[in-house]
Image (cartoon, rainbow, N blue to C red; front, side, top):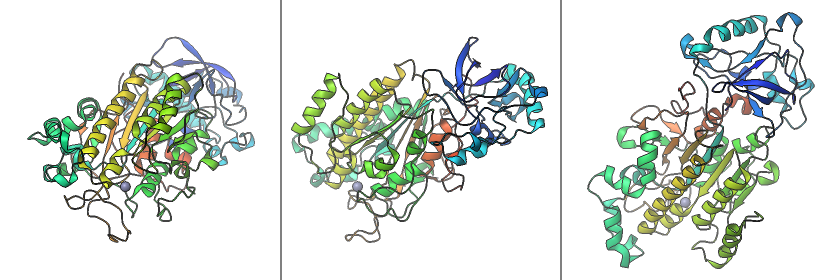
Amino acid sequence: MLAVWVRGVPGFAAGVQMQVKVADSSLPVPVTVGCPWEARRVLGKPGGVVRLRAFAVGRSPVVLCRTPRLPAFLRWPVKAWSGTSPRLGGMLAARAGCHSPCAEGASSDVPQRLSNGCQRPRWWRLLLAYLLTTLALPGWTGTCQTENLLLVTLDGLRWQEVFSGIDGAIFRDAGVIRHHGLFAGFEATYWRHTREARREALMPFLWSVVASRGQLLGDRTLGNLVQVANPYHFSYPGYSEILTGIVDPAINSNDKVPNPNRSFLEWLNAMPAFAGRVAAFASWEVFPAILNVPRSGLPVNAGFAPLVLPGNPAVTLLNALQTEVPSPWDTVRLDAFTQRFAAAYLAAARPRVLYVALGETDDFAHDGAYDLYARAATRNDTMLRALWEQVQADTSYRDRTTLIVTTDHGRGRTPADWTSHGVGGAAAPDGYAGDEETWLAVLGPDTPARGVLTGGDTVVAGSVAASALALLGIDRAAMDPEGRMAPPIDGIVDCTRAR
Ligand SMILES: [Zn+2]
């Protein structure tokens, strides 16, 4: 993310290039600057992060509001600034420009409510900005690094396996093993005498890279709780909660009903800075409905859909294999296709926000195949590593990308009901104890390396949406002025970290 202060500009003209100094560079960078409504949203929030969004020329031109004019006496050299000042102990924020109501010049494809952020700046704010900017810059380290987001969901993978590895009470029951000929190998691969060793054997990327450099939430043995807030504890309501930030009681089935609620992906895709740079890949064919593709226009490759990526022989082969390799399930493809499509798209289309929804863990669990469920978890972990290594090997993504991993629901806690989840079904109208329990992992340049969290407040799945926005420097109030979304997760976004 560019942290900027704009020089010598009396007011912002949307779509006009200006010279902007980037915090970590002495070179002026030409950017296009739009109305800093995001900054306005968090003014005055102690410790908050305020950012004027600037977008490199050649990416997405910004047209959020009409050219403002500042009074002549306010035309000092520094006209806008964003960030936090650890030296001054909290909020330091200012903006200039955009002082005429943006609605007058807002482009038609920008939600009008966004223009609320562009009101006439108060003279004292401008003066304060000038003084504090001048005084505080030497000690200023506050800037978010996250420009891009990877969100990955692993359907119905229990927190029990994530934090404790395979369950000895479950896997020794021969009835849950599908590949009996490989059982000795399964046990040798996954069984260890401590939970720490078992979980590392199951998900080595999570327990090496994420555990040492990021955060893992949801270990109930340590009193850290993550759960869905929706009352249903199955997939569509869970994904809707994660992606929209709200619980809609009307989302009560897995049917392909277009989601009436807007996801943060859809909202971002309507922003000039993200337009056309948000995409989703999913193993489950219901995702086009969850993300309401007819309305959102998001590129969503899901189920058994081929990927159209001309000139990519690997994708051509994958498309052919998808029709030749039978899936065990009628509505879910194997995750390898989803993952490789997503990786190819990431390399070719350069999305800023990529959502990858993997599904095998849930389906193998429903099938009662614990060995295949565990192996799917390990393959998913390998896919996480591959995605992470792909972005870290790419200079335009490296250290500017945050990875969030979570799940849409839990499952039963016992050997008798670990296969199941969901409230309201005929078999178990009241659901299965523990099937609301989930987990979450975060890894990125703005997330303090705290490892496995202990205690603290319960986190709900809906907080993923606001957390994703916060990592991208956007206050959720911009998307959700009514305040319906769950708040961002405490402690995973710290934009005052030094590089
Ligand atoms: Zn399920």
